[in-house]
Image 1 (cartoon, one colour):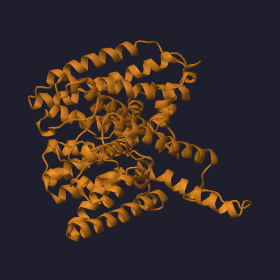
Image 2 (image 1 turned 60 degrees about the vertical axis):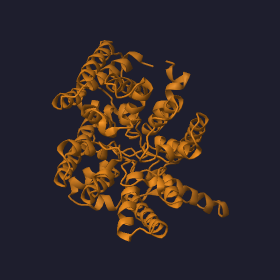
Image 3 (image 1 turned 120 degrees about the vertical axis):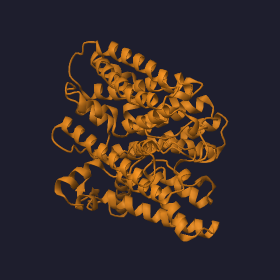
Image 4 (image 1 turned 30 degrees about the vertical axis):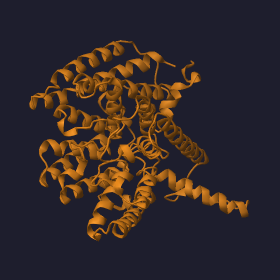
Length: 479
C-alpha cells in the first residue's frame, strides 16, 4: 500500500471540502444566521487538516488498491469534518447526531435527526443539501475534474462510481468527469429556474434542486414537498427525480446524437419506466379501494411517491406510512430496486436486477437441458460470467447487510417495522422509512448505536460495499 500517496490525495480532497464550505458560510452571512461562526471554524480546521496531509510527499502511482483506499478513507474523513458545522452551530447536541446528518447528506440518503427543520438556520439547511449534491455525482469525481495532477485516476473513478457496466463518456477520464459534472450542474440549474417559475423562492428552489438531482431529498420543510400543497411543484420534482434516476452517460449520447433513441434503446430505462408505471397503478388502485380517494388524487400521490422511492430521493407528498399495508409493502420492496446504473440513485439498481433475473431464467432452462448454451444478455451484448458472479456476490452481501442492520436496530430497542424500514432505507440511500422513521418522523429518537450502524449502512450503500469493507481486511494494507 502506497500510504503516502493515499494521504496526500485525501488531503487535497479535504482542502477542496474546506473551500466548498465557503458557500454555506456566504449563505449564513447573507441571512445573518447564528451559524456563521460554526462554518468559519469548520473551514479553518478542515483546511489545516487537509494541508497537513497534502504536505506529505506522494510516492508511486495509483493502483486499484490505492484507489479503493482513497475513496474509503476520503468519504469517512469528509463526513467527519463535514459534520462539524452541525455540531458547532448547536443544530445537533452530540457528535453522533452530527455525523449521522453529515453521512446522510454525503451519501444522498436524506435521513435526518432534526425534529424542527423549519427552525434550523438557513446556512445549515443549505449545507445539508449541498453535501447531498456533492455526494450525488461524487466528491472524488469532482476532484478528478479539478485536479489534473491526480494521475491514473481511473482507479479513483471506478472505486467511487462502481458500476457493473463500466462506461466512460469520452476516452480521457478527466474530460469524462468534467462532462458528467457539467450535465449534472446544468440539470440542477434548470430545475432551480423551473421551481422558481412555479412559486418557490430562490433559496428553497435551490435547496430542493440540489436534493433532487442528487436523489437525496433533504427539504426545508418538516413534511417535505407536502408542505407546499402545490401540484406544479410536485410535477417539477417528479420530472427531475426521474431524470436523476437515469444513466448520466446516456444524456451525453442524447446530446451528441441529438436524439432520444439512446434512452429508449436501453433495456434498463424501459424496465425502470415499466416498474414505475405498474407500481404507481397498483398503489393508486389500493388508495382508491381502501381510502376512497379520487382517482386523480390517488394517481398523483402514488406516482410521486413511487418515483421518489425508486430513485431513492426520499421526498414525500403524503405520509405514506399511513397508507394501506399493500401500498406500504410495495414501497418497501421498491426501496431495494433503485434506479438505473450510472445515475445518482442508490440501492441495488435496475441493471443488476435485470441481469440476475435473466441469469436465473437461464439456470432454470439449463436444469432440463444442460447442454443448451444460453448467454445472459443486456441490450444485445452478452454479460461476462465474471460480471454476473460479481453481481450475485453484491446481491448476497446487500441482503446480508440489510438483515444484520435490521437485527442491530431492533436490538437497540426499536420496533420491528421501524427497524426494517430504517435498515432498508439507509442501505438503499432512500431516507424516510416506516414507523418512527416515516416521512413525518425522524431518526433522532433512535439509540446512538443504531445511528452508527445506520451510518455504516448508508456509506456501504453509496459506495456499493467494496470500497468500504476492503478497509477492514488486513491483507488490503499489506505491501
